[in-house]
Image 1: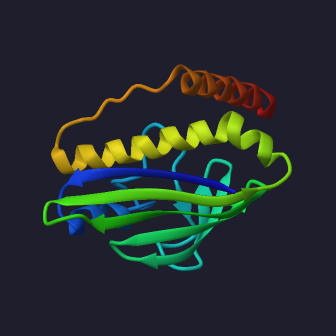
Image 2: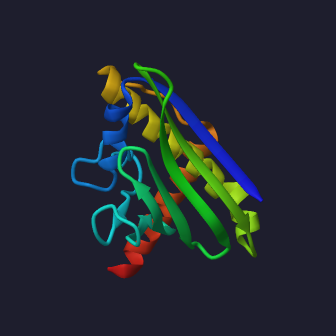
Length: 169
């Protein structure tokens, strides 16, 4: 069983942080780092049953409480069996925690791809999302550097995309 949890305490009231969550996948998305990573999308506005994802990761919204939580059930890639989601929790009047959790079982080739590639990309995306949220609530940019492993994985992906684009033209 895989459990992967990221948290960030933000100096902002819970309703402000909750509004970031509610903007997910919209044209004014204030949480997902679509400037650096493949965008997240759904077949309709955020609601239970909406189907979407980002890059090769597909999921369906299993539960959604506006401003507080959104839970997704994995549809793809094959071998990801479980859920992931964002949660907003008021710590006190001025501090709110945003959390992302994955709880899943890996099957087949996912047992290889998660530890080698996907986990590292996932961790970088979530930290970039939290950086984006922090920059929004503080008004100060957060410019965290990616690890060499992430830079290498992104380089490989760009090469793969260029090769695929040449084949398609």
